[in-house]
Length: 384
Image (cartoon, rainbow, N blue to C red; front, side, top):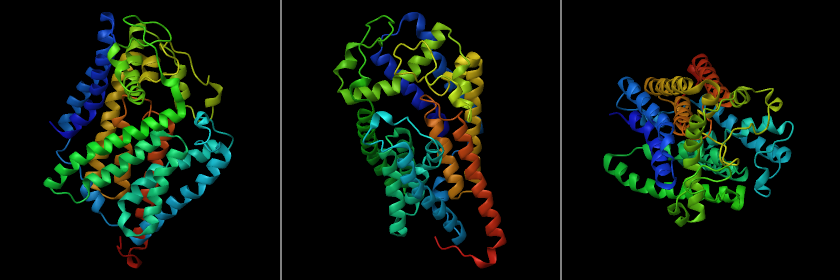
């Protein structure tokens, strides 16, 4: 089996294992709970026939840049950095008032669309970390920005980018084995930071009492084992498990609504929809339900199957793109798509306007740089 098969199915089966470990699941809800993991399994099995044994990450990481390419990417990085103070000015200093992390004001909402590229700063800074202070500075800003914004998702994406660069940079098989052990420490570190940021955002608000073996509004059917965990670990477990549980609960209730998907795909008219649309999840503040929650409510289980298959094919496209043209932009495109694919079992990341605009924007930069380099090729040399 190829790495893609393992990569696509592992997160959702970890979710399933933790749900079964810490939740009481009514017997009549088991088929609903198994629907999404089985769909992941089928899509992975199907796409496994079209994958290659190797993804050219090491080739892309080792690829040099033309002077012009480097200047374009440096300009973009410093443009993002210059907008961060404006983001703080319009949207507030979230680290001081963490409960306002999701509040944006006026033009600050659109500035945040650009500063969300802090993960790209992490990728660029990590890739050229040894090339001088400015790259170390770019990496530092890329990592500190989502912490200031109390944005766990952007921080995870930045750390994911750094991890890819670190793991695939010039490693032999023996070094890769050592890095596997070091990666465990890295994951523990990420979990600690994730928990701390979550505590800053929610305090004790993430604590949920148990309803025992019954489904009761305001409670989760958590077993006694869950409450033996430290509070910070409880938060991480709930973050991992509740999306799959909520998704299965909606199938079980046969609930439908088009508001979630329409709001998610709208760009200019999002404010015309309810801020928190109604769905009969058991605990209102845990209202995420995987990438496919809005799709399930809009079009049912068949729509979920088609959308998951589309995500898988989309990911395969970027695998083939980086294998054919290994460079910085195809690496960035691959990491963006790989990250959203990794988190399909959590909150929506893939079927949102921002994701597609980001991919289009990076492709536009890519083709623009190619065009400029071809025009100015006699005057530029590789130096990075």
